Length: 541
Image: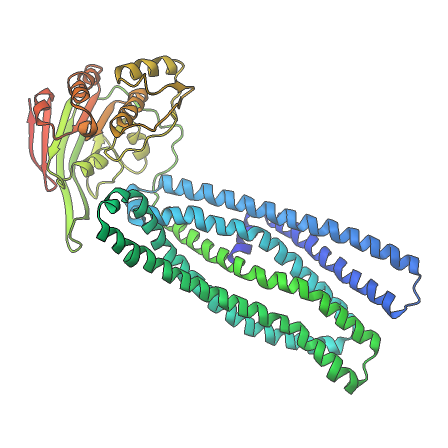
């Protein structure tokens, strides 16, 4: 079982100790049954000895059961934490183009639903271990009472478990199908939140989405989960017969036929009845364990895929940015990705451009011309399929790609605004931020206390100004603004082009501005125009 193997891999010593305490719990339970049976049979052993044995076994049962459950639960929670951290590291290290292929819904489903399924299975694993140990202990006691009867019961149990495994395997297949459908549901949930304005404004579109997409996927998911639940319920119900049928055979058939003593019959009946409770726990735990196993398979497949696509080594000591540089060259750089038509590939490039410090470069072109893709190539978020990028005549490879990215500060068109200024270590941080807030006309809206923004619930234009503030504080050598001014009012748009960009340029920064504001093109040192992935012109002003 994958979950058990994962626990062993995490800490085999912890699993071994938990298993030992679980077996001790099962043995003490079997000892209690034997003690009770001795008393009922009227054994010659002293009553005081049996009484103290009963008390001791009860204490041992309580301690061993608590220890086993606590150990397995702690170990499982540690595994869940490690999985979350491992997947997050893989996502952060994976190349952007591969993350875009996977899609946010699948990543979110894995980080939330799959990891939560494993967390839910932690106590199920603990109960499973104790129940199995208890059943094994009872089996030893039954074999001591009568080996012949035990062999007959063991054969009957093996046949029953084999039939149950068929039902459990079928249920697990439906769980896997439901988990695949869950990725589609997450995609529809994402559509609900991100496309809420468009759905509200078009009744027919909203109804079609609800019925044809969301409801259809939800019904399929529900059907597959119900089929799995029905099969597991059937396995659980039929599993109880594994113990009641032997009781009936023993009392009504075997005992009269072979003249089995009352003490053996009563011992078997009492022990089998006692085993029903752990069996019920075992059978109810199997669906949870199976769901966790399927979730672990999804996590493993995603994790292996992410690791396979990750070629960015850790460079903790080499991530400093350098403010002094001489040139940035793109030589024969190309990138291929799917265009609007699925049967055609859009190719950006080949790009042959060289940039220098202190340049203000406007990148222009129509929608779909490749401007945003050029930015991702330029900043190292996309890796060129052909050609080479050189920074100060140093080729950018997998070995120094992470270092190269640290030279850029970017505000994307679909930027994300963090609620605190992460990764900024500056003793004059608060005073500098206050100056920038005044310059960006946000001092009456936002305050910053120890790097934490008082609010991010602002208009889109104001949020972009906060993103610009973060870029200022990073103090990188190269700045990139992707349609930054598109959400600004006319007054602040003018401030951006006539004051903020020239100020960065005068500081020796190279600035790339993707823009459609042709009235400000005369402010640029250089205009690069793209059309369907090709550089139409590279004009210096």
